[in-house]
Image (cartoon, rainbow, N blue to C red; front, side, top):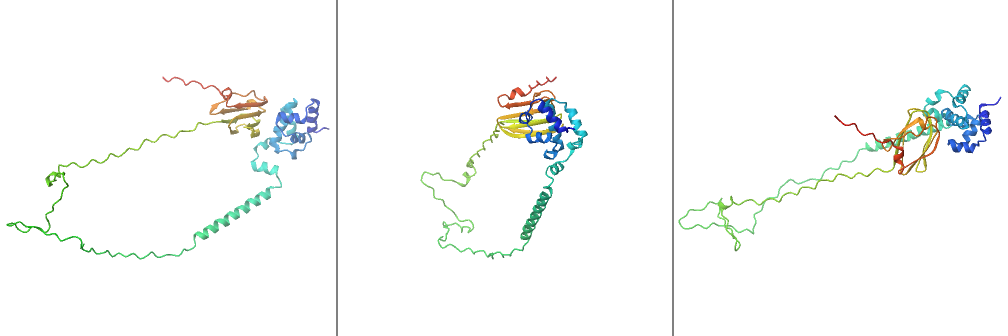
Amino acid sequence: MESLGQELKKERQARNISIDEMSSSTKIVGRYLEALEQDRFDAMPGGFFVKGIVRAYAKYVGLDEKEVLERYRQAGVFDERDGSRTAGERFEASFPGKRKLIVGLIVGLGIVLVLVALMFLWKSRRPRPVVPPPEVSTALPQAQPSSAEPEKKAEVAPGQGQPSEAAPETRTTLAAGQPETRPGDLAATPAAAAPAAQEPAPAQPPVQAESKGLAMDITFQEETWIQIYGDGALKVGGLFPPGRKIRLQAQREILIYVGNAGGLTYVLNGQPGKSLGRSGEVLNNVRITLDNLKDFQRERQPAAPSD
């Protein structure tokens, strides 16, 4: 009795389809397609991805996807719980022999970090020598009389008493052409106006650089296989469940390959995008650039007039 993989291979050969042709169209690695035909599920990346590969294979050769998936499910290749496995379980299934090595490396790194922290803590708590402050003299120097100043003597006119020592007469010599200033004139002399303070120039608002490039936010409504390239580099690839959201950016170009064009919605540069196609439709080379950006965006609805 033929196995499930042999039956799929027989259907492919009956339609004269090569592994390379199918790999190029479905974007699935050729060795995974060959492993599926040989029932070598240990060489494939996990049950969840096996389900997507089986679906894409059956659809490409023209078989009923649900019927083929049900036969694989009855054979125990995968079940509905495969999609709910955690990332750690999928990693362990893909790399069963490396888990202990990675756990050991993580534990060793943690021990090294603890030792380094203890060393810095020990150095910070070491006592430091106390240096006494230098002595500062608080004695103030005594004022000495200046020998350069001649002793002033007040002249007394005949018939007048001795002037008070506390208020000696002072005379001010004026330069030629300068009017004499009397004590009574000082009150009437206006004070010189202080120069007006210059107000600082108002700060200019920062100029925001215009955003350039392409930004795409995708929300999956149905289970969808997709590959997306940004500026020639692979950004996203795989089979995504309903409710999953992804975001990617590119400077010049976004190139999309999708196996379920109606299974997703997207927002392109902040504006909702048009539908890529029907549910279950396969699209290749969907190219989005800055020049044709408007072709993929929906037109904005005019705002309703307020009452």
